[in-house]
Length: 103
Image (cartoon, rainbow, N blue to C red; front, side):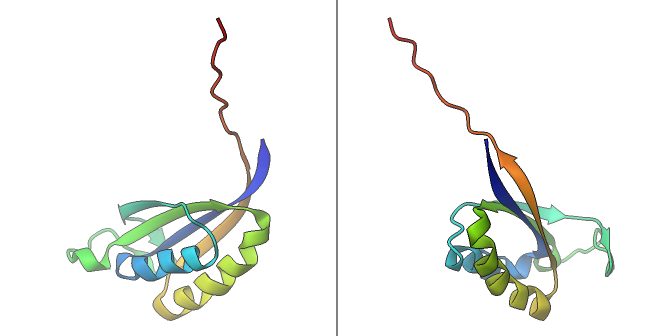
């Protein structure tokens, strides 16, 4: 197990490409995108929208603690301009080790 940072971004799906580019520029190569996210936040409920381009996405990514500063520098201006939110937390990564039994 080792410490990593978990990045959670909730934003308008229209800005997804810019967000993923920002993560890439920060050196964060992997991510998970969950589309059509509904919920209620500071801007109110976002579940009754009929237009696909206004749907929210939930992006999850993981990185080393050293990568957080570039992530914030690349993502914060996008969120300030286009809306959305980002949460960063400490988590432990557990990797499974594939064992091959010797015969």
